[in-house]
Amino acid sequence: MDTSRSPLEPSGFSRKLAATIIIVYMVVTLIPITWIVATSFKSVDSAIAYPPEVFFDPSLEGYVNLFTNRSRQPQEYLDSLPPPDTWYEELVRSREMVITGPSKFMGRYSNSLIIGFGATFLSVFLGSLAAYAFSRFKVPLKDDLMFFILSTRMFPPIAVAVPIFIMYRKLGLGDTHLGMIILYTVVNLSLAVWLLKGFMDEIPKEYEEAAMIDGYSRMQAFFKVVLPQAMTGIAATAIFCMIFSWNEYAFAVLLTQFNAQTAPPFIPTIIGEGGLDWPAIGAGTTLFLIPVMIFTVVLRKHLLRGITFGAVRK
Amino acid sequence: MKTAVKKFKGLSDKAIAWIFITPTLILLLAINIYPLVYAIRMSFTNFYANKIGREPKFVGLKNYKKILGKEEIWEKMQITAHFVCWTLILQALIGLGLALLLNRKFKGNELLTTLIVLPMMLSPAVVGVFWTYLYNPQVGLFNYVVNFFYDFGVFDMIGSSTLAPWSIVIVDTWMWTPFTMLICLAGLRSIPNYLYEAAEVDRASKWQQFIHITLPSVLPFLLLALLFRGIENFKMFDLVVELTSGGPGSATELASINLKREAFEKWKTGYSSAFAVILFVTIFGFGNVYVKVMNKIKER
Image (tube, rainbow over all chains, first blue to last red; front, top):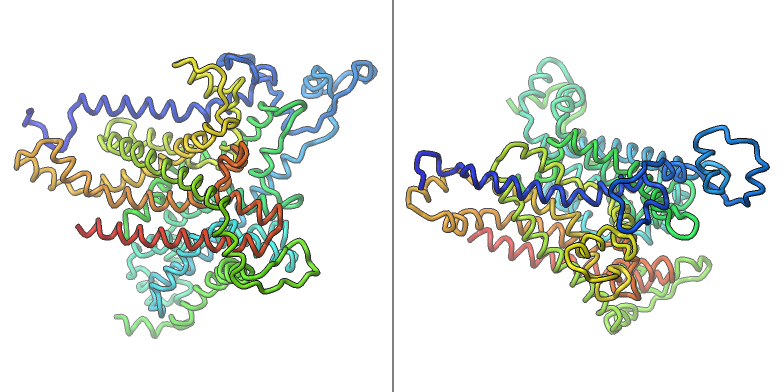
């Protein structure tokens, strides 16, 4: 055996082999995602071609279908109409249809944004407060309270969905943005408190104490010294809360219908004429996945830390 | 020093502690604990949430007896167990394998990790929808690729009752293996170098090092990852609803999907609450035993 290199360093060959296997796995695991993005740029006919088309004429039909409602018309009626004003009208006309109005997608997408950001802000804000208190002060029954906060994560959503449904109906919170923001905040809170407490534990107490000697009150020290110091942790926690709220389906499908429905329950309902309109579903999926993918790649350091967090420090 | 701090201006520390914790506790009590208590109370009644005027009657343990005596429920539990067991086995093996490979710090390691992690960041419901396209027997990419390697002819992953339970296992494994991988990777990175150095001095072979150092150190992490995945998959709803909606027939009707049908389609609120409580107790029971076993393994 080669004794000149450190025993801990894998050999060049085994490293190359490992890298090759990982790259192959990466390619295979990304094929489904790549495929759905590619499908969003296909025409309806090309999406149902067999064998599946890897090379195809790109078309924006999927996106046009996603954002509009259309109805099929006889050729005589189409001929009697004035020529189309826009490229998308022309595209729809070539399929013997006319645009009857915008679809609900934009509304569902903005519901996702409003509820996602609202719930993320609230859970990070409340979570920071609680985490700070647990991190710095003597709270009676601290360990029990922390465990209680964690255990609320173990409930299956469907188990509490019926009582929440009834409760929300009584309070007038059913199918409202506020109701969903509160609900997602609560689901995220347990994780937020646990993650943030870990990050706050790492900030030396001396920082606030120094600030308080300089005349800050405890509150001021918290907002002006501790919070800015905990920014990395807050960012990591916010990503998790955002991704959860953005992706959540069970509560959304059970508790919202018209007013506050988010995108995940809506995307499966995009149906074309005579079967599923795959390019349109692909387009909806792509637009919905893009923010999460950008988030993941750009903020990967915070994110990876957050995922492994519970396991690493205990 | 500590006694001096208490004399600073503003609210006392104790007051601040309670001001900071109370909002969180109130929200958790109102939206989490109260509904749970409510569900437990309803499980002893014959309440129907869609019949508003009707007073629910107390029926004692009738709902529980009905559920536990029903053969159909045991079928659902079996389907759930099949799903949970196979996803855990596959995710443990593939996840640990990938983590061991990624631990050989090669170039571009971090970016590759991020790209591999992407599937678990996606919305399970949306993932379910687009896999129905990949599984399509006429035009699906999955079927095409499988037939490319071995010609099975036309087969329908979602429509056939023998293949459907595997179709959900495949998608869940695709989506969540990165989770096991990440946690195992964290475990591998926490093994101190001197252990291997000492083993090398003792002329232990690479295989012996793997069996006696790597595996025992990473095992607690792997078990923890499996605990999280086990709980999540026992409650599995979103992915499978959009992928197979429990079908064909009830071949993939997991416990949660059955629960949703009873609660939100048949509106048997009392009955479904009892079922929810049973599921909850099962998860807690399994979780508790598992954690105890896990701690024993850690102590060794």
